[in-house]
Image (cartoon, rainbow, N blue to C red; front, side, top):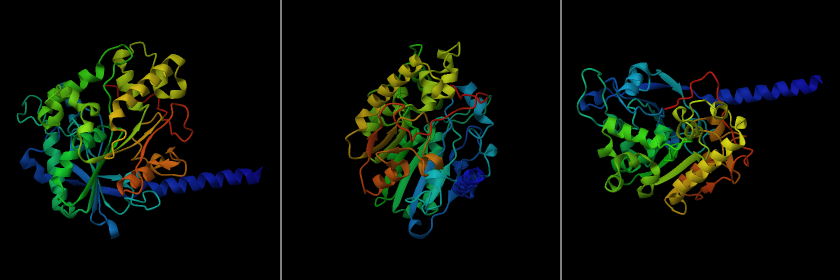
Length: 400
């Protein structure tokens, strides 16, 4: 009995040590003060910011620019709600953050990108870096300048060495994952001609579907985001010339036209999309989905059926990417959101796998041309390697 308890204790201690190692060293913030003169500012008028862990060894001329997520604001009221938070002001951002997952500087945790220049761009505009409204309402003091921020940050990085990049990746999670889709070709165009440029979108493939009440909630919401931020002129013309600008905020209507190579990491049962697109609070006034959204194991057969139908719609929406040699994908059947930033889902002994391949290996193999990767998981609950999210019932569900 004592030996068994000692063995358990040693195992837990080993896991704790591994997680501490994976957490990484905090990376200091850099403010782009030169962006202010260009009008490239956060919602509150403060300068944009990023964290840069410098490359070393063979990775010194390789750059990974990762965009932070954090939802969107769709009108003056919701944007004012973000204005004095880290999602609207660099004054409120942590001065240092730990890098892990795709941003880790440890070879054992990030074998293909550990020694690259790894940058995390902070998100403070509320529209996935697409907005550009010249006028500032003196009553609110809100700046909608996301597109200017994106360009100013990339120009700052080019001046600091990215102009000599041999390899470059634009990646991002959630709203940042959407940024990496919407700005993929723009990023490529800003890099030197000889640079090998690709993009990685993590949990950024938001789909346009009806919610459980039958309403087009997310379509209306995204249209309001685009209208509020003046985003239309910064969305792909190949899409906006055919469809309403609000629709071009959805990857399913524009991603097939991306010319740069791009890899999609997404859960078919994306927890943010289940909570905010399929079953948002406005569509569930009696809270019948509350427990289900906290933990997929709490879902009733009827709710699971709705989620299986959502998966079918998601696969249909991303279906145009399959078979295209420029596109890669890792679509698992986990109840998760953002899997490249977390070490436990990026690369650990028990990380999610498809075809016996972790996300880190799939992205690395695809980027370096070792093996093409386009895999779609079987339906829930078929994948035992999933790290399904369980949310704190006291935590706000971030419903839009």
